[in-house]
Amino acid sequence: MESIPLDSAADHNQVLPELKKQAYVGTQQFKPQLDNEWVEQCLNLSLDQKKWGCKIIAYRIQWFNGQWSTWFVPGINDLYKKSFEPMRRYWACFNDHSFEIIYMADQKKDFSKIKIEAVTHE
Image (cartoon, rainbow, N blue to C red):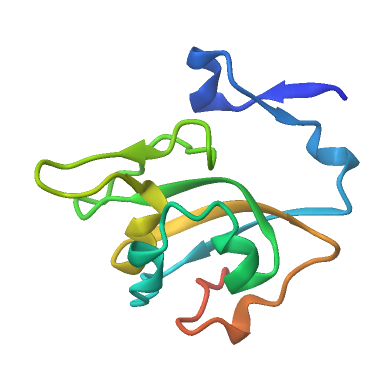
């Protein structure tokens, strides 16, 4: 399978599958989900599929200062640990931060049924 580098992951020689060969690959921005399951189950690499029925290929977080993080790839470069807290995946921040995902699914996802609506682009 061919691979393409992910911008922020390129420094670490990490690659993603050739996305154009997938059934559907899309992007979506979200407001904070206010859903503690993203924190409590954050180490579960199937949480995206459980909650949304799609595979998150990469994601980034918008920090409270308005800046965007680099892109994180689940299971590759997305673990972090704060002092006196357990290890987490950055998608734990979906609970209280805006974020953007690159996802793949069988077809385009209708995220309007998500608890907190996806950001719409006019």
